[in-house]
Length: 225
Image (cartoon, rainbow, N blue to C red; front, side, top):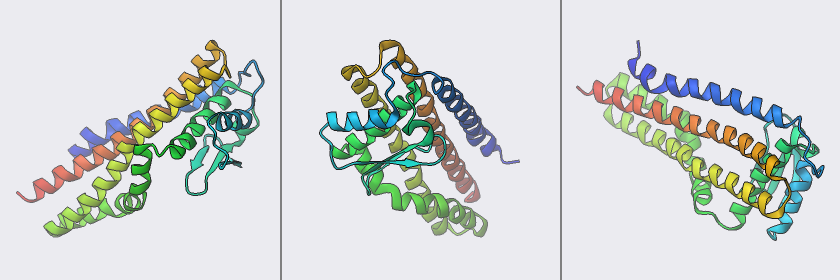
């Protein structure tokens, strides 16, 4: 039995499952509530981009639910079917959050710049790092363990840096919506619940990554004894 997995990874995985349930149920609840002004997600995003003098970001659609994202390389803000043309509280909240990422990009927000720089090595680290570390432990080859852990650490750092990026985007979204009067005070409460639930999924992902890294680190130390 892998005691380290039970101690460091399983609790984070359980939190991740609960977070996924929470974000889906909260999004579903506020997707059924139309906002008073009848503003769709796409309209909200377009309005907020214009309000922040951002004219070089295009709006697009992407299939699925909760697949909304901003692509900094393409400068495209893609909204899902349940957000793009829907005049709900949840749709406006999610659209505003993704617009927050576009604003971060336009203002060279530090953590976003760092996260973008980490993407290539993080992709390699998450895919190859754990396997290299395990192979090194099995073969008692210290240099391979070190390389694996170093690569894995880069992917963990990516998850950690993602947290302030996502929190900041949500904070920007709420402040902009409140400042422009796009939603009422009561509607903003719904947006905060949707974005808070979404933020929990990022926290859970970071904890899973950190738990796995700690597990690998302890396993490598035990193998050297």
